[in-house]
Length: 77
Image (cartoon, rainbow, N blue to C red; front, top):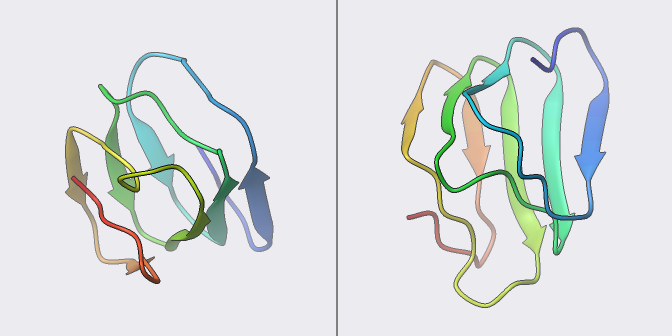
């Protein structure tokens, strides 16, 4: 759970299981930053993927919530 204002930046591969919740602020994936492919994301803040440099962008199971998702030139599958 990412809660509160501010930004949490993930720059490496994260393989935890379960869902990802952005309750406030920004979850920023940068460089090779990633979350587990099996993770569903509930976004009620900002989910920023514009800095991801891996080929193909990012992959998640589902995306829900009322927050903003920033892709830049990346893909979300």
